[in-house]
Amino acid sequence: MSDSGYLRYVALGDSQTEGLGDGDDVRGLRGCADRLAEELAKEHPDVLYANLAVRGRLAGQVRAEQLAPALALRPDLATVVAGMNDLLRPRFDADEAAGHLEAMFAALTAQNARVATVTFPDIGRIAPLARPLGPRVLALNDRIRQVAGRHGVAVAEMSRYPVITDPRLWSPDRLHASPLGHARIAAAVAHALGLPRSGDGWTRALPADVAPPSGPRALAAELRWAGSFLGPWLVRRARGLSSGDGRAAKRPALLPVAVPVVPGQGGSGIDSRAFD
Image 1 (cartoon, rainbow, N blue to C red):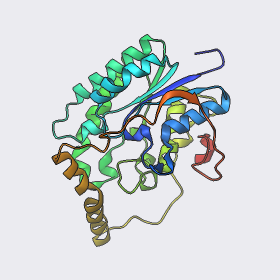
Image 2 (image 1 turned 90 degrees about the vertical axis):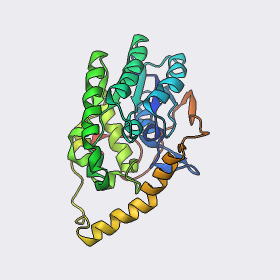
Image 3 (image 1 turned 60 degrees about the vertical axis):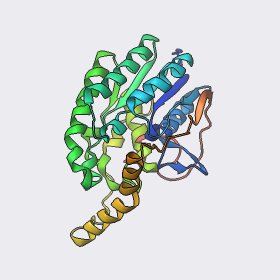
Image 4 (image 1 turned 180 degrees about the vertical axis):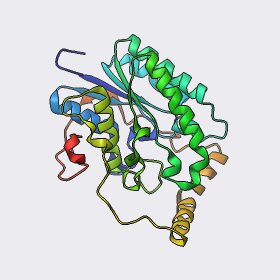
């Protein structure tokens, strides 16, 4: 890291870091890592950014496929976010997933990179049918805190604030953040890193909205979600397929960052005032 700040940022991870839910494969994906890079570029226009994330990847796959390329880029800042895909598998092992994360933390920090990661929200509060996975989320988050602490990794505590499970922060599939959700994740990581102009605005509740559906309407909504998203996901798993099959990193090289000018909330930057 130079005296002027982080100038070489590399993001490792799965679909959340790739940016699913924030744009699409036709117009392009933005996502929390892109938004964090844009914030860095607002302070230091010469920052370079690479995004090695690929959707569907397990923590071990992120380590096997992305760690060596990340180290070769010699980042002074890296984000490592993985484990949610492991958590959704029948044979989930929190220690195994955290072990892969720790190996990445150790290798990157040994190369003097500043590293940041996140804890995960209770997905049962986002998708009620996923409530049985709650203990897994708690176990994985505990392991993430432990391994991050051993290597001086900054942790954005996404799991500790109720706003993170507000449906407006999530896309219709309830697995990937919406544009506003990606902005909040980026703001949380910036805050954990102590970046200029970061703050705790990302932790604050959104303005009151209409009441969520209840009774028969809630059941109908769950059935629609199961048919549209859960069912196809289960079919892919049964066939041994992944949404990331045949895909490569969207931004494998360190490139300059252009800061978009997008009016309104969820646009360019992650200034905490956007969440007041």
